[in-house]
Length: 386
Image (cartoon, rainbow, N blue to C red; front, side, top):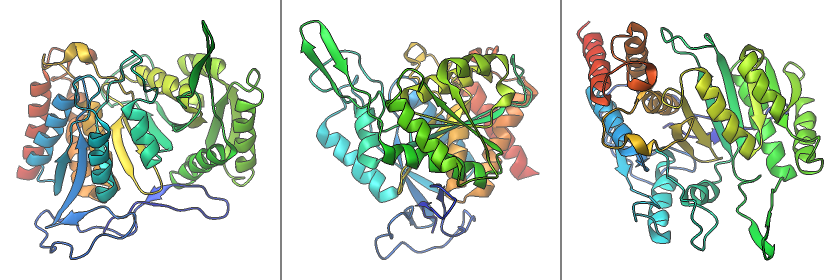
């Protein structure tokens, strides 16, 4: 069984990995599990893995439909337990959230779209998106920003990773009006969580053969809060002498990403900075429609697009780019040790983009979502025929 584990050893940080290789055959006759899976294991029964699916808002449901169509064409041994959770579609409540959390805690692995957060204050500061992350302790968000072969942008051949702490910082949902017209919004930085995300980043760099980690901060102004985060990163860096370590102020980091993004390898940062940098970096390789992402806790892995945007203006128009969600889904398959299916689908997606004949509007083409999915499936069928 594939198991999500976070391993920490001397000189190493936290990083999810699977406990043992999985049988990749789609014709597996593995019997249904007779007992509940041990802690951290993905659920598999009758030869198929169970994955929680949360379509989300905007074009999320359309993108999830694309994933299901491609998985069906590739005979992927995954069954989705689908739950709709939305604050803007009247499909959100504490009871609904509990149902979703129960499924995710059972399955250990989930794929989700963006759950839109309304700006109106209705008595609750923490959005359902944030509650989901906190309940599962999804502390590490990983976005791999990589150029797609055949799709030219201002910067090509980019390959960098953004690691974001996403349980505290500016998104702590601790706000109040101290006196009329004066709002205090608290930014929470703790040593425990700063150490944890720093160890995760250095361990990721070690496991993936990366050579440098850059800690992004604003400690020159927020001397205590960001100062603590920066100090934790420096202390952890000393345990990894083979990994180059540098620090960079957030505003300079944004400029350097635009001017010379090739200088970066792995970047680690607090919550808000990561949210901004994710979207900036996605723009360097083609936009939110092409960048995959994932979030981890000690027991769970949640796969979602790297730049989280609901694209409400594209709903129902069949124009959304499914590339990011499909690549996110292939990363999920790789996490489940379904390497064959992961490579099969990711190769098909990248071939469609490289050939340049079928591209959605955000990539400069005129193809619909349906056209793109059909092209991917055609490549899958051609591969099987071959």
